[in-house]
Length: 309
Image (cartoon, one colour):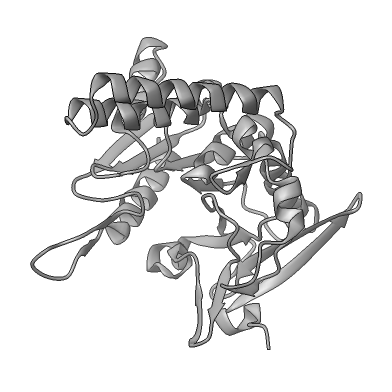
């Protein structure tokens, strides 16, 4: 039997609009329309909200249970295209996921959910914090340019440049570390360049794939988040781990430098020493360190400080 949202204290809502079906979930403990809204946007990958295996099941996210979130917010999360709440880890991704996943579609999903929450009076508090992690941070930044009811943005483990640059930087750093000769590295960059050129020549293709994602997904998420962030005047909380192997700190610093150049003062930025892409820190001598509790404390404190300011 599939796992139900109720087993994890979530209530499911289904929006059916123009032949689209969007499923989203509200964490029910402490729910109150008067609370602020915390919309969490997950990163990339064809994963359900609840992953089943032969031994049991687990959620693929965790922020909803943090005491500060439960106390101050209504936590909302959205299933990705084609997914219901749970799915077995060995099941193939729904065809709908690959056909629809793009930056524009994920923005559409989230915007539709926020408007549904408001029009159905599920929320009455005007404060809406949209929190995106990894790919979700790109979605959050774009969403905030379209939905003016969003009051706060959290941009976690996201980069400021095109995702194409991230791949070039991986190779440049391997050259610098001596793992590749200059000639070998340059050849890899030229191969990548041709691959990205091919993607951009078929930017709507859902039949061509690279590294598990369609060209549609790659072409749309190649858009720089920086240009969207610079359009925003709402408070922004930006954070990443110092040992993030996915997003380069140079692109984090790029965002800071461009905000400084444009004399924008709505960006709070923080790097967590030793943390990886998921804000976890590994240890060779003992248990690792989870930086998420501190991250959430810092984010919630920032949120309340902006309300006072």
